[in-house]
Each structure stands twice: as structure tokens, then as C-alpha cells.
Amino acid sequence: MSQDIIFRPALYLGSIPFEADSLSRAAFARNKLEVLQPVTLCISIAGVKVCDPDCKTVFMAHALRRISYATCDPFTSKFAFLAREANSETPCQYFHIFSTDTQFQAEELNAIIGDAFKLAFAKQRMQQSNNKNINSSNRHEPLPPLSSLHSVELQLPQAQELDSSTLGGKEGPPLHIPPPPSTNPPPEPNQDLIPLQKKDGDTGGQNKEDISCNGYA
Image 1 (spheres, one colour):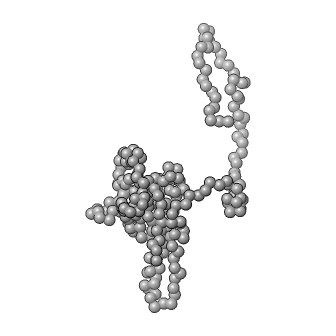
Image 2: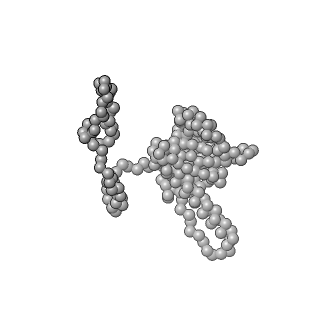
Image 3: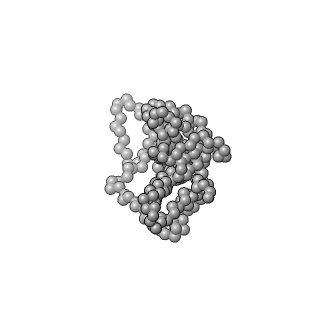
């Protein structure tokens, strides 16, 4: 039986202790954003391995039982997971941080980790149930592989127009457009403006303030 592993490319930013203060995290971000190392994340219900792009060298490996948290920031295309070091004398935990090309990839990595946790937990419960009912004829249905939920290799979604065919033949939800404001819009520049009264001796030589609204149509 072939191994059920999902492979995803990413850029490794680095690892930082969970107990680090905000200044240490800021310094880490400044130092690491300029040095990004291409890696491949190999994810299964057994754990997560961080390898080189060709999957010939394993940089780190974390069993799933040592991973306590995973998250992503789609707006910056970042993904991270929190894992306890296996060989550490103290229960030290590190955030391992990665960057992806798109927000879709960051969200997908987070979803893959979540599904791996669900399948691993279901497998453990199934084994415990089988041990208790070893003489029972009741048999559980086999769990779906992780590769049935996510493609083994990265498949980027193609850019498509948001029409009925893209939404599976169904019309999307209606857009809720807010009502217009109750007050009248401001007057156009240099129109219907009350001029300021000039004092004696004021020549009005000051430059006019630019009142054009850049970025608004």
C-alpha cells in the first residue's frame, strides 16, 4: 500500500520559540523576510516533514501528536504550525513559519493539517473501539485517505469569471448594496463656496490648498 502523503511547496521563513516576546518576534521577521528557503511540506496522518524541493533531504520531522496548533494568514500568504521539540529536555515549543505564493495555498495548507488531525483522531478511536469489541462482528468502514480530500500535488485553481457555471450552475447570493446617504454630497470644488472675507492688507497671496479627492471617481 502506497503512503498517503500530500506534498506542497512553500518558502521556509524560520522557527521562533513560542515564549519569545514581541521584540524578538519583530527582529525575527526583519531578519527572515529577506532569506526565504524553498522547501516541500510532506503532510500525512503520521506527521509533517519539511524537506528540500526534491524531497531528498529532510530538514525537520514532527509527529502529529507533537503538533498542537496550526494557523494561516491569507492576507499575507503565511502558514505556521506550533510543535514541541522531540529531543528537548524541556517542553520547548516552536512556531515554524512558511510563506506561500498565494493566499489559496496558505489556506489549503491549514486545511490539510486540519483534515490530517481529524483522520488521525478517527483512526485512533476506531482502533480503541476494535480492541474493546474484538469478538464482535461489527466492523467499521475504512477511513478515506487524506489524498481523497486533497490532491497529492499542488493544483492551482484557474482564474474564471464568476458566472453561473463557475458556481456549479447555481446563481450566487444577491449583493446587499447599502442605501445612499441621507445628506447631500458636498459641492464641487470652486462652486457654491462662500469666499473668506479678506482683512485689510491681505493680498491673498497664499497658495490654495489642493482640495481634489485623489482616488475617488
